[in-house]
Amino acid sequence: MNITLPLKQMTIEEKLQAMETIWDDLNQPEQEIQPPAWHGIALEVIAAAIGRGEESFDDWETAKQRIRNKIS
Image (cartoon, rainbow, N blue to C red):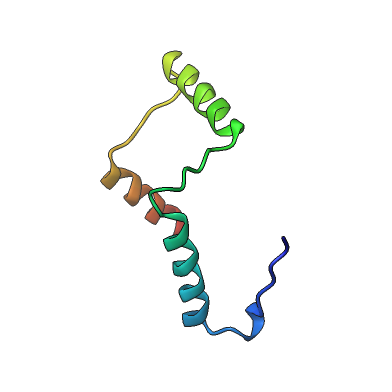
């Protein structure tokens, strides 16, 4: 199924409402969405790097500040 929306003609509010409607539908408890296989592979790669000591983590406040510094 190919769905097209008149995005160029939609206001930001209409676009946000469309996104919220889709999210609400996807967020129904009876729907189980399976992640793609590559997610598991990516997690395994990260876990291995952590095990080798090649990855490090910052707390959320430190990470937010680093992001702010990069974009300012």
